[in-house]
View 1 (spheres, rainbow, N blue to C red):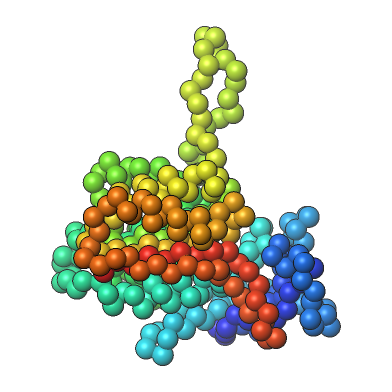
View 2: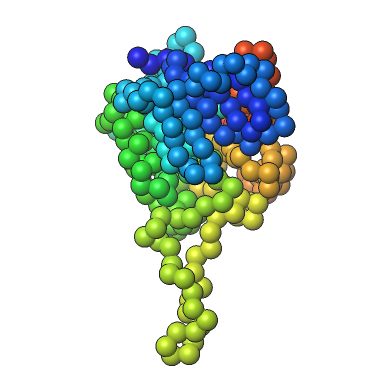
Length: 319
Protein backbone atom coordinates (compact mmCIF):
# COMPACT_ATOMS: atom_id res chain seq x y z
CA UNK A 1 0.00 0.00 0.00
CA UNK A 2 1.30 3.49 -0.82
CA UNK A 3 1.94 5.77 2.12
CA UNK A 4 3.71 8.96 3.15
CA UNK A 5 7.34 9.65 3.89
CA UNK A 6 8.23 10.76 7.41
CA UNK A 7 11.57 11.63 8.96
CA UNK A 8 11.36 9.87 12.33
CA UNK A 9 14.69 10.83 13.91
CA UNK A 10 18.26 11.77 13.01
CA UNK A 11 21.68 12.08 14.59
CA UNK A 12 25.23 10.72 14.67
CA UNK A 13 25.43 10.96 10.89
CA UNK A 14 22.30 8.92 10.19
CA UNK A 15 18.57 9.36 9.66
CA UNK A 16 15.64 7.11 10.52
CA UNK A 17 12.76 7.33 8.06
CA UNK A 18 9.33 5.80 7.71
CA UNK A 19 8.66 4.81 4.10
CA UNK A 20 4.95 4.04 4.00
CA UNK A 21 5.39 2.52 7.46
CA UNK A 22 8.68 0.72 6.85
CA UNK A 23 11.48 2.01 9.11
CA UNK A 24 14.75 2.58 7.24
CA UNK A 25 18.09 3.61 8.77
CA UNK A 26 20.42 5.38 6.31
CA UNK A 27 23.52 7.61 6.42
CA UNK A 28 23.03 11.38 6.45
CA UNK A 29 26.13 13.62 6.53
CA UNK A 30 23.96 16.59 7.56
CA UNK A 31 23.08 14.73 10.77
CA UNK A 32 26.72 14.31 11.80
CA UNK A 33 26.61 16.78 14.68
CA UNK A 34 23.06 16.05 15.86
CA UNK A 35 21.98 13.66 18.60
CA UNK A 36 19.14 11.16 18.11
CA UNK A 37 16.06 12.07 20.14
CA UNK A 38 14.41 8.63 20.07
CA UNK A 39 17.23 6.07 20.36
CA UNK A 40 14.86 3.21 21.22
CA UNK A 41 13.13 3.45 17.85
CA UNK A 42 16.29 2.80 15.86
CA UNK A 43 16.44 -0.85 16.89
CA UNK A 44 13.10 -1.35 15.11
CA UNK A 45 14.53 -0.39 11.71
CA UNK A 46 13.68 -3.04 9.12
CA UNK A 47 16.40 -1.92 6.69
CA UNK A 48 19.88 -0.59 7.42
CA UNK A 49 22.50 0.70 4.97
CA UNK A 50 26.19 0.48 5.84
CA UNK A 51 28.19 3.11 3.98
CA UNK A 52 31.61 1.50 4.50
CA UNK A 53 30.63 -1.76 2.82
CA UNK A 54 27.85 -0.27 0.68
CA UNK A 55 25.50 -3.03 1.70
CA UNK A 56 21.91 -3.18 2.86
CA UNK A 57 20.74 -5.40 5.70
CA UNK A 58 17.02 -6.21 5.83
CA UNK A 59 15.30 -7.78 8.83
CA UNK A 60 12.31 -8.48 6.59
CA UNK A 61 12.26 -8.60 2.78
CA UNK A 62 11.86 -5.25 1.07
CA UNK A 63 8.34 -5.23 -0.44
CA UNK A 64 8.36 -5.15 -4.23
CA UNK A 65 5.33 -2.84 -4.24
CA UNK A 66 6.54 -0.35 -1.62
CA UNK A 67 5.53 3.15 -2.79
CA UNK A 68 5.40 6.65 -1.38
CA UNK A 69 2.45 8.91 -2.03
CA UNK A 70 3.01 12.61 -2.70
CA UNK A 71 -0.07 14.85 -2.60
CA UNK A 72 0.59 18.27 -4.23
CA UNK A 73 -2.69 19.79 -3.01
CA UNK A 74 -6.35 18.98 -2.54
CA UNK A 75 -6.94 19.89 -6.19
CA UNK A 76 -4.35 17.54 -7.69
CA UNK A 77 -4.07 13.80 -7.98
CA UNK A 78 -1.32 12.23 -5.85
CA UNK A 79 1.91 10.99 -7.37
CA UNK A 80 2.84 7.43 -6.49
CA UNK A 81 6.59 6.83 -6.32
CA UNK A 82 7.94 3.25 -6.07
CA UNK A 83 10.93 3.04 -3.73
CA UNK A 84 13.72 0.49 -3.88
CA UNK A 85 17.12 0.37 -2.15
CA UNK A 86 20.07 1.26 -4.37
CA UNK A 87 23.77 0.32 -4.02
CA UNK A 88 24.47 3.92 -2.98
CA UNK A 89 22.07 3.96 -0.04
CA UNK A 90 19.35 5.83 -1.91
CA UNK A 91 15.72 4.80 -2.29
CA UNK A 92 14.87 6.20 -5.73
CA UNK A 93 13.37 9.46 -4.50
CA UNK A 94 14.56 12.57 -2.67
CA UNK A 95 11.62 13.46 -0.39
CA UNK A 96 13.11 16.87 0.40
CA UNK A 97 12.16 17.88 -3.15
CA UNK A 98 8.43 17.76 -2.34
CA UNK A 99 8.00 21.55 -2.16
CA UNK A 100 9.75 21.90 -5.52
CA UNK A 101 7.41 19.35 -7.13
CA UNK A 102 4.52 21.30 -5.64
CA UNK A 103 5.92 24.53 -7.12
CA UNK A 104 6.24 22.95 -10.57
CA UNK A 105 2.63 21.80 -10.45
CA UNK A 106 1.15 24.98 -9.01
CA UNK A 107 3.02 27.41 -11.28
CA UNK A 108 1.92 25.44 -14.34
CA UNK A 109 -1.22 27.58 -14.26
CA UNK A 110 0.88 30.61 -15.28
CA UNK A 111 1.87 29.02 -18.59
CA UNK A 112 0.18 30.12 -21.83
CA UNK A 113 -2.50 27.82 -23.19
CA UNK A 114 -2.45 26.22 -26.61
CA UNK A 115 -4.23 23.53 -28.54
CA UNK A 116 -2.76 20.05 -28.24
CA UNK A 117 -1.62 20.15 -31.88
CA UNK A 118 0.54 23.20 -31.20
CA UNK A 119 2.12 22.03 -27.95
CA UNK A 120 4.63 19.71 -29.59
CA UNK A 121 6.21 22.53 -31.61
CA UNK A 122 5.74 25.48 -29.25
CA UNK A 123 8.79 26.34 -27.11
CA UNK A 124 6.37 27.65 -24.47
CA UNK A 125 5.28 24.07 -23.86
CA UNK A 126 8.73 22.47 -23.73
CA UNK A 127 10.50 21.49 -20.51
CA UNK A 128 13.98 20.14 -19.81
CA UNK A 129 14.86 18.11 -16.72
CA UNK A 130 18.63 17.73 -16.35
CA UNK A 131 20.16 15.20 -13.96
CA UNK A 132 16.57 13.95 -13.88
CA UNK A 133 17.18 10.91 -11.66
CA UNK A 134 14.02 8.77 -11.43
CA UNK A 135 11.72 11.39 -12.88
CA UNK A 136 9.35 12.77 -10.25
CA UNK A 137 9.97 16.33 -11.49
CA UNK A 138 9.38 15.18 -15.06
CA UNK A 139 6.00 13.74 -14.07
CA UNK A 140 5.06 16.87 -12.14
CA UNK A 141 5.74 18.91 -15.28
CA UNK A 142 4.14 16.47 -17.72
CA UNK A 143 0.88 16.48 -15.78
CA UNK A 144 0.34 20.06 -16.91
CA UNK A 145 0.51 18.91 -20.53
CA UNK A 146 4.05 20.07 -21.26
CA UNK A 147 6.48 18.06 -23.37
CA UNK A 148 9.48 17.01 -21.27
CA UNK A 149 13.03 15.99 -22.15
CA UNK A 150 14.23 13.87 -19.22
CA UNK A 151 18.04 13.63 -19.23
CA UNK A 152 20.17 11.51 -16.91
CA UNK A 153 23.59 9.93 -17.45
CA UNK A 154 22.63 6.67 -15.68
CA UNK A 155 20.52 4.22 -17.67
CA UNK A 156 19.03 2.60 -14.51
CA UNK A 157 17.68 6.02 -13.48
CA UNK A 158 16.08 6.56 -16.87
CA UNK A 159 14.50 3.10 -16.79
CA UNK A 160 13.18 3.85 -13.30
CA UNK A 161 11.67 7.09 -14.62
CA UNK A 162 9.78 5.11 -17.26
CA UNK A 163 8.43 2.75 -14.60
CA UNK A 164 7.41 5.72 -12.47
CA UNK A 165 5.41 7.17 -15.37
CA UNK A 166 3.69 3.83 -15.92
CA UNK A 167 2.81 3.56 -12.22
CA UNK A 168 1.02 6.91 -12.52
CA UNK A 169 -0.83 6.10 -15.77
CA UNK A 170 1.48 8.45 -17.66
CA UNK A 171 3.31 5.92 -19.80
CA UNK A 172 2.00 7.73 -22.88
CA UNK A 173 2.83 11.22 -21.58
CA UNK A 174 4.99 13.34 -23.93
CA UNK A 175 8.29 12.60 -22.16
CA UNK A 176 11.52 11.86 -24.02
CA UNK A 177 13.81 9.68 -21.91
CA UNK A 178 17.47 10.32 -22.73
CA UNK A 179 20.58 8.63 -21.34
CA UNK A 180 22.98 11.48 -21.92
CA UNK A 181 25.48 13.85 -20.38
CA UNK A 182 23.63 17.00 -19.28
CA UNK A 183 26.34 19.45 -20.35
CA UNK A 184 26.80 17.86 -23.78
CA UNK A 185 23.04 17.63 -24.35
CA UNK A 186 22.52 21.33 -23.58
CA UNK A 187 25.33 22.31 -25.94
CA UNK A 188 23.76 20.27 -28.74
CA UNK A 189 20.33 21.79 -28.09
CA UNK A 190 21.82 25.28 -28.44
CA UNK A 191 23.31 24.34 -31.82
CA UNK A 192 19.97 22.85 -32.90
CA UNK A 193 18.17 26.06 -32.01
CA UNK A 194 15.76 24.37 -29.60
CA UNK A 195 14.14 26.40 -26.84
CA UNK A 196 12.43 25.60 -23.53
CA UNK A 197 9.99 27.30 -21.19
CA UNK A 198 10.91 25.26 -18.09
CA UNK A 199 14.36 24.02 -17.10
CA UNK A 200 14.97 21.95 -13.97
CA UNK A 201 18.32 20.68 -12.76
CA UNK A 202 19.54 18.85 -9.67
CA UNK A 203 23.26 18.40 -10.34
CA UNK A 204 25.46 16.23 -8.14
CA UNK A 205 28.55 17.54 -6.41
CA UNK A 206 30.67 15.28 -8.61
CA UNK A 207 29.82 13.02 -11.50
CA UNK A 208 30.58 11.41 -14.85
CA UNK A 209 28.67 11.12 -18.09
CA UNK A 210 27.36 7.82 -19.46
CA UNK A 211 30.01 5.10 -19.65
CA UNK A 212 29.74 5.06 -23.42
CA UNK A 213 30.84 8.70 -23.52
CA UNK A 214 33.83 8.41 -21.21
CA UNK A 215 37.21 8.56 -22.87
CA UNK A 216 39.83 5.91 -22.08
CA UNK A 217 42.54 6.73 -19.60
CA UNK A 218 45.07 9.06 -21.17
CA UNK A 219 48.61 8.03 -21.91
CA UNK A 220 51.45 10.52 -21.93
CA UNK A 221 51.93 9.87 -25.67
CA UNK A 222 50.50 7.49 -28.23
CA UNK A 223 52.35 5.18 -30.60
CA UNK A 224 53.19 8.13 -32.87
CA UNK A 225 54.77 10.06 -30.01
CA UNK A 226 51.92 12.61 -29.93
CA UNK A 227 49.80 13.42 -26.90
CA UNK A 228 46.29 11.96 -27.28
CA UNK A 229 43.27 14.24 -27.43
CA UNK A 230 42.13 15.55 -24.07
CA UNK A 231 39.39 13.42 -22.54
CA UNK A 232 36.15 14.84 -21.21
CA UNK A 233 36.46 16.09 -17.66
CA UNK A 234 34.30 14.82 -14.84
CA UNK A 235 31.54 17.09 -13.54
CA UNK A 236 32.27 19.30 -10.53
CA UNK A 237 29.46 21.57 -9.36
CA UNK A 238 31.54 24.50 -8.10
CA UNK A 239 33.48 24.69 -11.35
CA UNK A 240 30.89 23.67 -13.93
CA UNK A 241 27.45 24.80 -12.74
CA UNK A 242 27.87 28.52 -13.66
CA UNK A 243 28.70 27.64 -17.28
CA UNK A 244 25.81 25.19 -17.46
CA UNK A 245 23.47 27.86 -16.11
CA UNK A 246 24.65 30.27 -18.81
CA UNK A 247 24.05 27.68 -21.51
CA UNK A 248 20.61 26.91 -20.11
CA UNK A 249 19.71 30.60 -20.26
CA UNK A 250 20.53 30.42 -23.97
CA UNK A 251 17.80 27.78 -24.24
CA UNK A 252 14.98 29.71 -22.57
CA UNK A 253 12.17 31.13 -24.68
CA UNK A 254 12.66 34.73 -23.52
CA UNK A 255 9.01 35.73 -23.07
CA UNK A 256 8.26 33.69 -19.97
CA UNK A 257 10.06 30.84 -18.30
CA UNK A 258 10.71 28.85 -15.13
CA UNK A 259 14.02 27.73 -13.70
CA UNK A 260 14.51 25.37 -10.76
CA UNK A 261 18.04 24.65 -9.56
CA UNK A 262 18.79 22.46 -6.56
CA UNK A 263 21.97 21.00 -5.14
CA UNK A 264 23.51 19.15 -2.23
CA UNK A 265 27.11 20.36 -2.21
CA UNK A 266 29.17 22.44 0.19
CA UNK A 267 30.90 24.01 -2.84
CA UNK A 268 27.85 26.11 -3.73
CA UNK A 269 24.78 27.34 -1.90
CA UNK A 270 21.62 29.21 -2.85
CA UNK A 271 23.31 32.62 -2.51
CA UNK A 272 26.04 31.60 -4.96
CA UNK A 273 23.53 30.31 -7.51
CA UNK A 274 21.27 33.34 -7.12
CA UNK A 275 24.18 35.74 -7.64
CA UNK A 276 25.23 33.96 -10.83
CA UNK A 277 21.66 33.78 -12.10
CA UNK A 278 20.87 37.44 -11.42
CA UNK A 279 24.11 38.58 -13.02
CA UNK A 280 23.54 36.56 -16.17
CA UNK A 281 19.87 37.52 -16.42
CA UNK A 282 20.70 41.22 -16.08
CA UNK A 283 22.16 41.14 -19.58
CA UNK A 284 19.06 39.65 -21.16
CA UNK A 285 15.68 40.99 -22.23
CA UNK A 286 13.17 38.87 -20.36
CA UNK A 287 9.44 39.19 -20.43
CA UNK A 288 7.42 42.13 -19.24
CA UNK A 289 7.85 41.45 -15.54
CA UNK A 290 10.83 41.19 -13.26
CA UNK A 291 11.91 37.66 -12.34
CA UNK A 292 10.40 36.33 -9.13
CA UNK A 293 13.06 34.48 -7.14
CA UNK A 294 12.59 32.08 -4.26
CA UNK A 295 15.63 30.66 -2.50
CA UNK A 296 16.32 28.63 0.60
CA UNK A 297 17.25 25.28 2.04
CA UNK A 298 15.45 22.02 1.44
CA UNK A 299 14.75 20.30 4.74
CA UNK A 300 13.07 17.30 6.31
CA UNK A 301 11.30 17.75 9.65
CA UNK A 302 11.06 15.15 12.41
CA UNK A 303 8.09 14.87 14.82
CA UNK A 304 9.80 17.11 17.38
CA UNK A 305 10.14 19.91 14.82
CA UNK A 306 13.88 19.56 14.22
CA UNK A 307 14.90 20.23 10.63
CA UNK A 308 17.49 18.17 8.77
CA UNK A 309 19.23 20.13 6.03
CA UNK A 310 19.05 18.55 2.57
CA UNK A 311 20.58 21.10 0.20
CA UNK A 312 19.63 24.36 -1.49
CA UNK A 313 16.98 25.45 -3.95
CA UNK A 314 16.65 28.43 -6.27
CA UNK A 315 13.42 29.03 -8.17
CA UNK A 316 12.94 31.68 -10.83
CA UNK A 317 9.62 32.53 -12.48
CA UNK A 318 9.10 35.03 -15.28
CA UNK A 319 5.57 35.35 -16.60
